[in-house]
Length: 248
Image 1 (tube, rainbow, N blue to C red):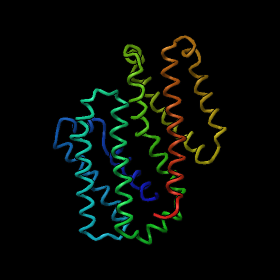
Image 2: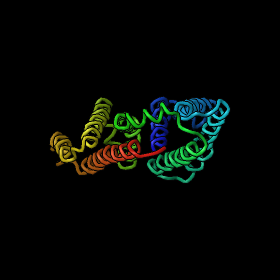
Image 3: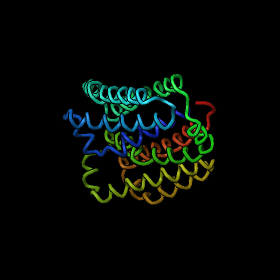
């Protein structure tokens, strides 16, 4: 499970932080952009494998090839088929990410069966499991969560309301959501779940007049807030479990 946690961390870094929205949009129609993204992603995967396992150069190169081809398949032909299903934005996003996560889980299990973990890596995971849980959780609460929640709200927002809100307000709302998730995640990792209610209450008080006068805004606000709190708490629980599990 700890190896799977490391694979999830590398996935978040190379599929979200090292890939901008412009790059993500460009790879939809440009195979060169898609290929470059897959090579960068596979390089991160191969580096993770090399750091964790006593694998030969040939085995590391093989893992690079497997990750590159599988990522090309999911982000290329499979994504086009998913798009053709006419699903909601959040539905397409969830299917895409679940395919990646299932594949990463299978590859993590395979790596643990094929190769022996490096003693240094094993000792580091034993000694720094809590720190890795914090890093992974806070990493997830940034860009990955922001994109997921944007997909959730995309089909529920009134286009006219979004445009009238203004770019600066929308931008500040995004950062408010990120800081909210970081605080909720930190409180969850510290087992201070009761304090999370104060965060939600403070945010609601700041929007009280708008919540009272605009029913559509209130529904979208509630949906986004609940999704944000849920993802932050769930990620904290998940990564604490993965990095504090025994064995590979």
